[in-house]
Image 1 (cartoon, rainbow, N blue to C red):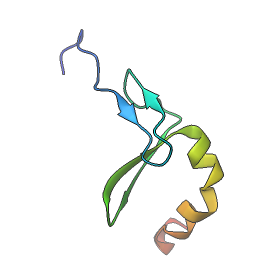
Image 2: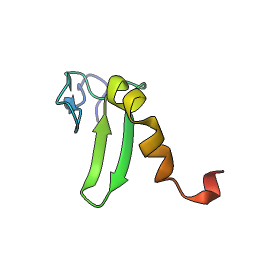
Image 3: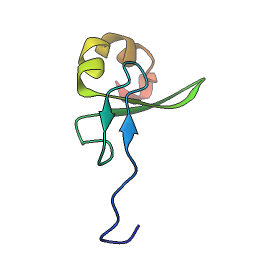
Image 4: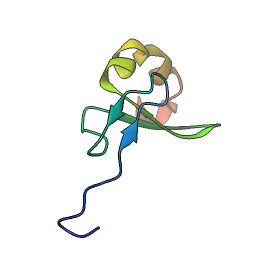
Length: 60
């Protein structure tokens, strides 16, 4: 991507919140059976235990 190009907008997979300048660093990206999912900060906080439950034991 060129320096003056804006990243494509990002959408929260769960609630539909839009980030017009791409996913902020506070958003979470995860992979599931459905593919790549982007979660906004609010959905990440609300579903933290569910996200942690899907991590490999190698992370602990």
